[in-house]
Length: 327
Ligand SMILES: Nc1ncnc2c1ncn2[C@@H]1O[C@H](COP(=O)(O)OP(=O)(O)OP(=O)(O)O)[C@@H](O)[C@H]1O
Ligand SMILES: [Mg+2]
Image 1: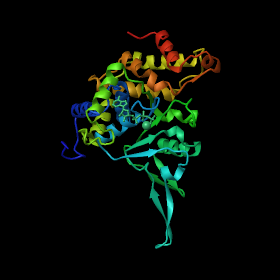
Image 2: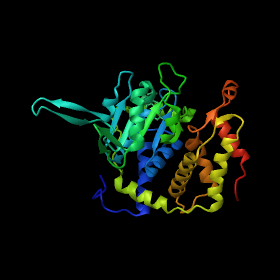
Image 3: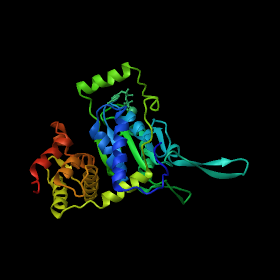
Image 4: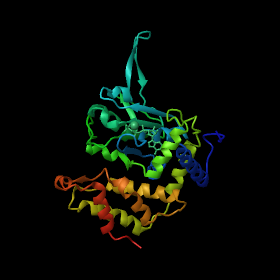
């Protein structure tokens, strides 16, 4: 570990450098997937939750495990299985025979970074328990609220909903995720790189052996957040965010467009992206870059469009192409 004290104040520049090291650390293990790594870092900066979606075997779990190993924060992982109960996630009251009293045993949500793996393999009741604490950042037991640590960020993974044995996340609650990141299949060169790493002995179960160490901590995230808050956004750029969201509401392919909450998410993510790029002002391009991850889970296709094979991303693409970009 390179840092002295976790509570020592950092400057914005130090925080940005630390987050650059964080990306490099993840890249020691995960080949490619730069856009997903960027999305994860933006979520950390915004203290937002992220949903990673992709077919099996594209390193969704590995990405989040590596990110956690490169952060000096507490992290826990829960495998969401069909028999997982709400109390297995949030915690539950346990009877202590010695004291003849009930005691609260904290569930895995009492952590900084929670990897909620394969979240759509668990039934709705358990999903709801997690989604509720994501929103409230506390667990209430017998009327007593117990606050979660700060930061508390959920990185959830899921397979595309058409996969068998999955319970789609309740649509109304999907917007508790700041971003939904799609994890694509790697390109040919990247896949070759993956094979080379495995061929020369890389073991995804042992991240320490792969050289991953904590390079950023809560103080870096706090300083980064503070700097992101100061990012300037011109009125025309704010207007662009609003116009894009309004554009989704009038799209003939969508029956539900992005809400004002979606607009605020897009703005927050674009500011974080601008700051990561070394600027203290956000541009329309920052907004464009984050429009899909910030909005794709907040809109709903019309059934007719879905039948015709239209995808949410293609609709967002055409909204981006139609709404005039401010100059
Ligand atoms: N981009 C990549 N870089 C490095 N390794 C990769 C990459 N993509 C896949 N792998 C390899 O594939 C393995 C499978 O990844 P992982 O278990 O994280 O997939 P997943 O997307 O979580 O799949 P599932 O949906 O089945 O849980 C990794 O442990 C790693 O060995
Ligand atoms: Mg996985």
